[in-house]
Amino acid sequence: MRRIQRYIAGSFIKAGFPVLVLMLGLFSFLAFVQELDQVGKGTYQSMDALKVLGLTSARRLADLLPVITLLGSVLGLGWMANRRELITIRAVGFSPWQIARAQLSVAFLVVVALSVLQQFAAPVLERQAAQLRAKALTGTDIVGDENQFWSRSKGRFIHVGRVLHGLVPQDIEIYYLNDAGQLTSVYEAKSADVISTKIWMLHGVHRSQIQGSEIIETELPLWRWKSFLSAEQMSVLLASPDTLSTLDLYRYIQELRSSKLSSHRFELIFWQQLGAPLSVLGMALLGIPFVSGSLRSASASQRMMLGSVFGILFYLGEQISVHTALLFDLNPVLSALAPDVGVLAVSLIAVQRTR
Image: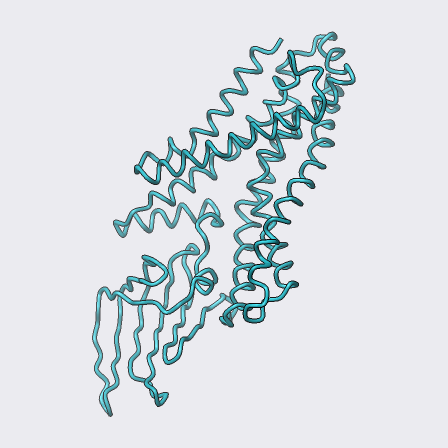
């Protein structure tokens, strides 16, 4: 029985690998076409676009893994069905749940890979990609071992010592110079809430204004600062919420709650990440009903088409659920987990009814 289960799992892996290469290659090509729109701006060249493409591949792969799992499961079992191997396996007493166990053994490996990509690889590589892109496009400098941020616009300079959880700038210094290049004021802040690209709310501000030979110092608990940073520079300083690890998202949500700010959007992303393994497990099991009944004699291309359609519908359902939750302020746990729990429930029911 173990040998049969290893054979089923091996078929799953053999079918999934070319699907992975095909889908990752296709979506990487589309991403590269988008990057080419930036080529020629600043010092951004084609080689920079290729580097960015490589660095963002981890996040792209993490997003594609549920669909890749579905197609690998469908094709792997489909090949066995076409060669009458599944009929033979069932004839010797192998139940659908034993086949499901073999499928899940591979799915758990995919879940581990997904977790590594989400929690470790993607956040670091996405940040490097943002830094590379912004430095080439805008000349923004990233210096120091902790990626301290420096930027300027005419007579204004900003320095950020560090960014907590990837989204909270801390140890901020802002310098203003006059037309003669003389320092006129300095703002030092402990931290900031980034309301938008152009508006920051600084906390614990110490303001020093230079008027002739006098320095006027003022303490401000809050100060609304109009940022001069571009969208590209902001992408260097702050991580996109979609690229944060689950732990960083959790910490940032607690930070927002302690500041009595809305964390709804970040809670949706947090629960989406936690629910992703459920969708992978569900997709792996769906291969079993896909090769049963009237689909047993279907060709590989037909199964590929049906699997792709189901994968697209799942993705659309997930996006609709999340955007509806954002629009109507719905419960983030239910909205984010509904598609993943739904596909897992459907797959379990379908396996149970498989004959």
